[in-house]
Length: 118
Length: 110
Image (cartoon, rainbow over all chains, first blue to last red):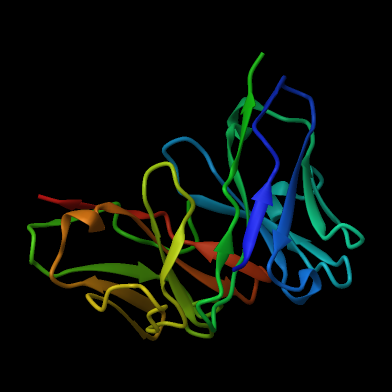
């Protein structure tokens, strides 16, 4: 059974940075992209980008370029997403996910609530 | 503004059939397979349809999906109270080189 376990909730002040971790298990870490998707309160799903755990290659959504950094540590099979220069409208649940459009193998982490408040 | 367009809400009585539309473009739905996700309050999304019309194991057969051109649809027949949730379409976008999502449709069982 594939599971993605994320780090716990965070409270940050505007202007700070936050790093969320995601540790997949039950599957080969480097076989699938890790996607990061966020959901603001009462809003829909928004993709921030993805990382290829095998190569470290990334693609960020244009809206987040320059403010989001995705990395991975293959020695501990963990992916990370950092958001810098936080604003109040970055308050959201951040999910990591393995998305597959050709098979049922779609897996989501439990979500990490990031609250940005002064 | 989402790349994919869905109606914000849909409703029906128990036993009815409802459909949810998802409109995209040539760089996403026309070229690639569509997934549909169900999200219950406070939980992560769960795939109910993958690859346009494939139902994962454990998903009731009252859920079905279809695609034509730059649009896709999710149908729920024999609507049940446990189907009350938010539903999102999603597809890979070749221009953006990443997944895109619809704005979500809230399904209410009257």
